[in-house]
Every structure is written in C-alpha cells, then in structure tokens.
Image 1 (cartoon, helix red, strand yellow):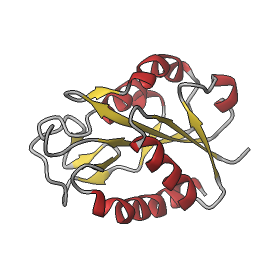
Image 2: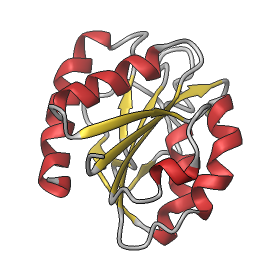
Image 3: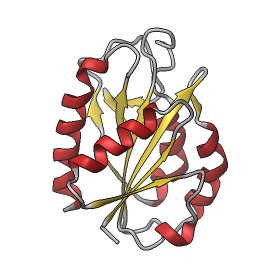
Length: 166
C-alpha cells in the first residue's frame, strides 16, 4: 500500500484518464481506485487522498460519487489530507464550471485538511461555486475545450501535492 489513494468516478472515461495521469505523475507512490468498486476498508488507512470526479449537467456530481460520497464522508478523515480535481466543460456549462468538486468539498472540508487549491486565473468560464476568494477548491480540468492545457496543469498541481504528501 502506498501513502496516496486516488479515488475517481468516471462516466465517459475522462475522469479515469486524468486519474491515471495523476497516478503516473506520482511515479508509483499512489494507488488508484474506482469509487464504483472500492470499499471503505480498502482505503481506510491511507493518510492522503486525491478525489476525482466529472461534473454532469449543471454542476452535478458524477453518478458513482453520488452513491459513494455519503460513505466516504463518514470515514474518519481527521489528520488526513485530501486534494480534489474535477472535470468540467467551461464553454457549454460556463456558469457552473467544475462545480462537482464543490459538492465533495462541502461534504468533507470541516473534517479534514483540503490541499491543492488553484487560482482561477487562466480558465475561461463565467461562474463557478467551486471558486472561493479567487481560488478553485481543487483542480478543474476541461478536456472538452482546454485539453491542450491538461498536462501542464496536472504536472504543476502534482508537484505542489508532492510537497504536501511526500
């Protein structure tokens, strides 16, 4: 078992692809779990979590996360650190861009330390509840419109997380 558990929920495959890229950037220090199949017992002892989800509709949480988040939020997260990433479409859903990460954030922020927030600079969107004081609560990824920026954003984010986690 590594120190980092990457938990993802993916309907169309993009969130899974990004989760795998994050795992690769951690160079063997992270384990990958699909929330559709994982049990709390499998992830209970990790000190660090990276939570990844796609955003559906107008800022809604991905279906597998809808079922798993209540259990995950009951996990004892005290003394642990959690980073969040979410996929979104900044053009078609520019007023609710990547808001699924805010759903996760709201569920766990009072019981753990959230890390990996990023400035909202450089993103093209109109509004998002996932932004607090100019910072996204995690890393938003837009594979529909800003796919050419994904690798750079992930590399920079993971380097910052390595300082927190390793």
